[in-house]
Length: 473
Length: 95
Image (tube, rainbow over all chains, first blue to last red; front, side, top):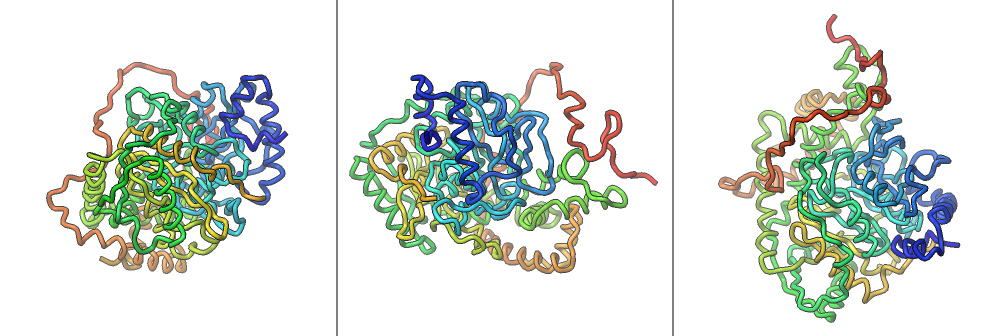
């Protein structure tokens, strides 16, 4: 049997009809991971005998988990040396919700850029993950392990986290579905914080229906996350409607300019034409402050990160370096434990928050964030959603951008504004380049309107074949 | 605005990170490059714009002050690099 090839909703149906069991699915998936992961390296740390975590006796489907989401009793290290050996004393809320829904999770975790700092999964202390469509290419990042695992059928479905595109960009590079929910829709309790005002956990799946099913499981108010939204969660599967007639879609002109790969542009235009033919109404709109999103992000995200990562000091968990005295212990531990990109971001964030630079950098960035949010508020007054490419290029080669951090940052140019505005967005596969690399279509909507994303994405998917394409491994 | 090596050294101390000479040189160059890009923001007039530090209109999230169970001490301490009894051990602070 090759159950690992199926989607979660197909497997859940099979379980219901007594055509398969959770045990069979796990055993099949184990064989797949053992057979293929040496090539892809989507998972990190030693392959333990306890592949499946608690809940395994359930009648559900295992979810693969990014290495920054705490799992009680299963190491969670953010792919950083500074958290080597960290074994969380509790579960993230999303993990408890997965167990409560009758599903389970894998005890081995998905690779990522250290502390989610990156767009290629090359900044992992365990080494890079390879893109299943071309093993010489990156899977995107920072949730590259989760995206590659789903694409390679090494995961039925997965969770990632998205601070500036870290779910959507790897979903685009690996040809899978990735959703960044509205800020506050999914609890961040137990997600090891990168930038607290931007982070959200979300699904990476083989199709749109699975994303809706997983969102039904993980969404909702959590008293343990004071930023979670206390409004009822709709049944997202009810939004899987194969009809976009009359839906008003905006195309932001600022996203179709220099820097967009011509082949990606052509593929996105074809997808737009497909949706037009299905009855969606398109119009060009303007998000005038788009060009400021990346600089704003790299102030706010690094400032928040520098504060959040202050807790890694060798006192309570993880690495502790041998040293003379307390300050020396902090410094040696942090210098030894953090990788290059983590150090860069901590320094940049500390600089932006430091005396004499705060107004010119941090405060100014917060103000421009307001302008970026207002851009979206304005266009959503008479639009249901916005469509853009997820990334300006398809997956790039491993090593291509590691020495130029700024170039790496610019690969998130289309995804970052969404986090700054706190709105939801989904990436769905919409084509392959001549070289056989996937391209993703990004759909954005207003706060808490995930249903609109599902409706558009589902209609597109049901009328195309891209989500059925699989990499040859 | 540019960033020189001295500033990077000061910031590194604030962030409790130690940099070798090579690392300092490389990082200073990269940070300068990144900051030059970020300086694009100074071309915008932000005088009468309110800052957004948080995207949701929620503030002062309160809860009832009721006692609840917390993590058992052995779980709290299980990841400690060094511990003694119910305590985390750190290098001596006062000589």
